[in-house]
Image (cartoon, rainbow, N blue to C red):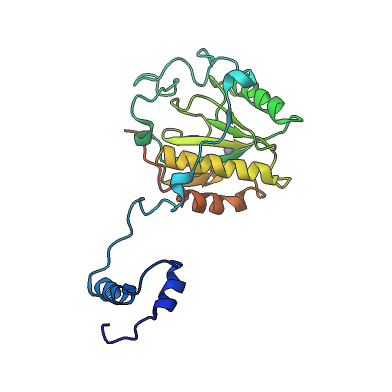
Length: 250
Ligand SMILES: [Zn+2]
């Protein structure tokens, strides 16, 4: 490359945007480009390949805590999530003992079956229904995303969810409040959900994103108006799509 046309100083400064460099820069630029072309390529640095390049800028979204929305305490007498997890009671309330990054692989997206007028009433209604009618110890999901764009804390993140039958261990549950087999999700909700998923993917070192229907084919959750967003959520968060990240519990 040493025989190539040298950039004039004016051209080089125009390209680099540096107006104060002195005249010897032309030789330096030529030597530098020859050196760059002669050495083997270096892999791109820093972030893991599956992460978007702006991952370091991802912020935890504001989250309405259980205390703030008036959650009930878990009911450990619940018939379908009774007592505490053990080898003899595999369906019991399971508090993960390991680093959550070693537990979670997949974020599973849901919609709410019904909407009760506003986000807060819907969150409370879902918890009541899951405890009293579904027989679980607490709200099934780890996070709930309102139509307003507010994100609500669900059951504790260090506790196994009950949102995706047969695949709960290692799956973080996120529900979008609304009936998305019938209506289009509003953009503040999509944006807040995206921010939440970006943050979960980074914080929990997730690998995959799936809709509920992909694990449990008898459901159409999260609905035909939300499902088209799943690919974009995964792409933004640097996740693969589908159920391939699920690891059966040992
Ligand atoms: Zn669902």
